[in-house]
Length: 144
Image 1 (cartoon, rainbow, N blue to C red):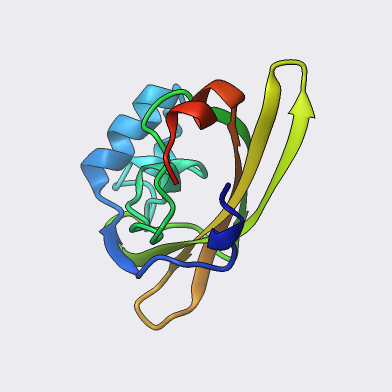
Image 2 (spheres, rainbow, N blue to C red):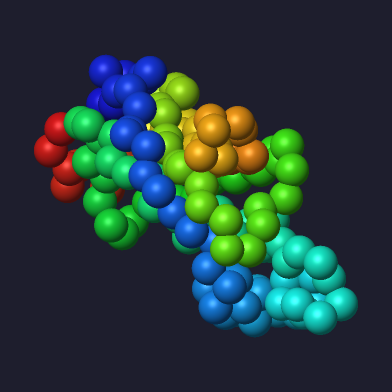
């Protein structure tokens, strides 16, 4: 269903690690460590490790997934360095793999997408791998 998207990548999108967004995110996940928000006692604040989930990674051409009904299969982050509050980063995504498996509820698709965040000079800050599971019911409602 999505084999033809393997290797396709989005354009880079500029994002900012906004102080207010970091604070709200830390509150939402219940991790109020002062390194995220305390400007007085830390020379530089950082974002929580899963904060890149809120970034815009652009659109991958021909990868039109529905807004609901997908299953979050797996997600891993790798950091070269922390994300600093108020820095600008460039984010993009690439389809790494797609495969299908047959299960009790029919065929399921497994879409592996890798996302990247770079500084303005092009140095990698983080990468994120995620697997999205597309159930038979969702697949039937999609047109590719």
